Amino acid sequence: MIEERDATDYEACYWTIAVEDDKYRDDTSAYIELRLESLDNAIAYIYDGTDRSNATAFIENNGTAVLGAPLRAPLSAKLIVVAYTAPNGVAGSISFRY
Image 1: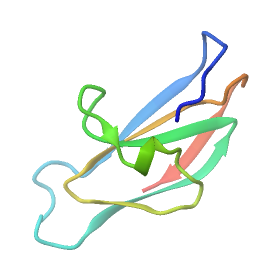
Image 2 (image 1 turned 180 degrees about the vertical axis):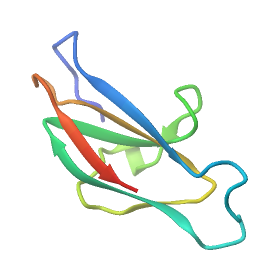
Image 3 (image 1 turned 180 degrees about the horizontal axis):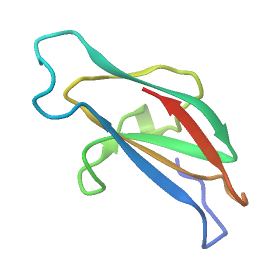
């Protein structure tokens, strides 16, 4: 569940993680692995989709991403990492690897 915010201004960023179209074989068991390495005064969510209009929750019940947990998706997937500052936070940072 997304936490209610009192502040009207906050920082937010997103990144799209995907293999280029036609650059992979779909008949393999290969996958994209995404792992959050640090969240400093920030919260992250992972979605499956190409943009806001078709994004669906990647983590069950739209839970927040957990540090260090490997998140795996098929090579054909397109993941969106959304991060924003924690409530009442001034600034935040995130690092991840894929």
